[in-house]
Image (cartoon, rainbow, N blue to C red; front, side):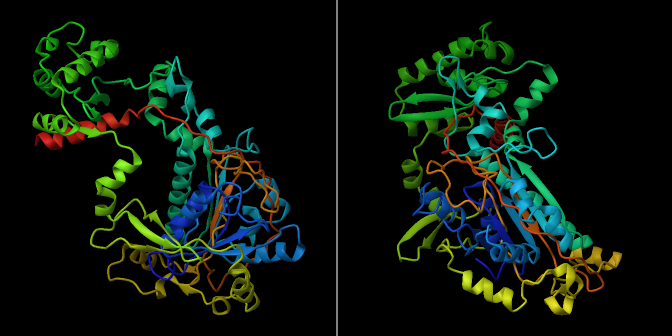
Length: 518
């Protein structure tokens, strides 16, 4: 995954495990960075031979290098600092206190190299009284209100099972790191950026929280009902499956009533406008469901009928249904990775497409534990990981942004030329020390080789730091920083849960229905 792409030449060092932080290193590797994963002697607990199963590790660690370091060993601790301070980006989700004890906190690393981008995943923000609390995905769902609003009065709180908070928190850190890369290219300055599972969970529910902040009314769990429009995202059984549709816009509501033989509902006082339809959602859903049962439609027939009146709709499918449906294959979303033992498995490509470029059909595999240790140690011995803040550009192989190959009219380069910046960046990519925000994971101790066997979920309670450093301007020097900091981790298995449908989907449906109507 290295050598090409917009981040080719960037070195990332990651101290991470589980999901949130490793997902950042994974995306940086896909963008061309060289990512080196620093692991304790026991390895990432999600390794196939480890305690949390292989799906997590093989999803979020492809194309990385692996070196085993015991931070309780002075020589390994010193080597870890050399790697972190010589990187462009550092990512971690270990505890801040632990990393600080080893001199690997953001302040120490950036003192040695001010151009580093240092990113961390924590359970809770560092500027709050809960700064040192650990966390995992389930805690993120619980502490952000997500579990409270998900489910029904009868079911009680329900969790989403696929680590949504870990995922969105990792995406937030990736966004922050890439913004810091742009800043460094423009100004030559590094950054320390931080995300937390708590805030990641909040941002997944922005519209719910916006309504609460504006109205002062705390939402209660409503299951599959909608908080603001009806009928919307109605989940309906048909003869051979389940469909979902929305028809809350006045023209769509009237067309749906006509389609289902419910014309009288248009003028019915219980359903005459959106406000009263919301108040009578349960009854309305029953009337629509009864009409579909009378019609006896299959999924295909219902889809064709909904297309005929131009309302948005879909089919509720299992993973197998979706795989067999072919859209995954048509989109180029799937790639094949080959393990060290020769066996293969399918993985997802990045969730975006560069128009005009083909998505890769093959993916690099995750590293064998410690497989690249000798190579990385030899690089350090040759001075390739020297602390950039204390060496000249000639010593480190630094290239100034102004000297790099670029397309004519590059707006960033024009800005640099105009301002006279002498920004430099490293031509080698460092591994980001990433720590993931899974159960027990954020805030875990990288030096602790005996993590709980039940670790499997996401993690809120520790920091995953990402530091990206570019090589310094030859005119600048800086003192070497202090040592790393280890992290304490206690991880609990991933906890499934379910969230209510995000009401922002209503806006998307409006846009889609307007597009289809045109």
